[in-house]
Image (cartoon, helix red, strand yellow):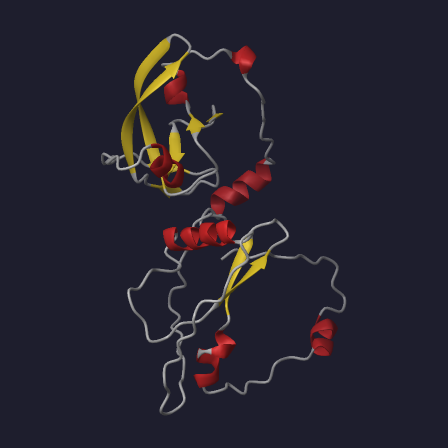
Length: 228
């Protein structure tokens, strides 16, 4: 748990909440929270917990959010529980440039950690005639990667990117790719399933020489790592 004087309320991510308080039901709340980037969001609910520290004991409210960086001991608990500041292990001060903060606040939805939807665009897959569904069995995953793969699948499901289905005529094996950060990116090997059944779009792709030529005269370049 981290003491965060910048957080008005004490919060806990749902994953940690389910681990610490299994089968506990949440109470509804009308509280609206604001993220660091300025985006407003509603917590999943609130629960009352017994907080014990040294010789102090209080029943306090703990707000549950979909995801976050960890359990935060906010100002609401600080008003009730007196901490021994000499025993705080680490102090971290966030120094944010004023202009950067203004940009983050102005474009909060762009810098949000939440996955949003693309609106106004509909994708179509044009299949070949007389297509038969292809069902491929799951490929074995190295034991060392299994915990990370399961964690990533849980994250994708929690954010609504993927969803479980009881049955399906189509099934594509996944390929886990280890990222520089040590995490895992899950890719579908669609070339062995649906790609073979699609009508090929013959749109000409730009050549690498043309791409480099278009960068002529450029002074600043950036690398964007888009999360999925």
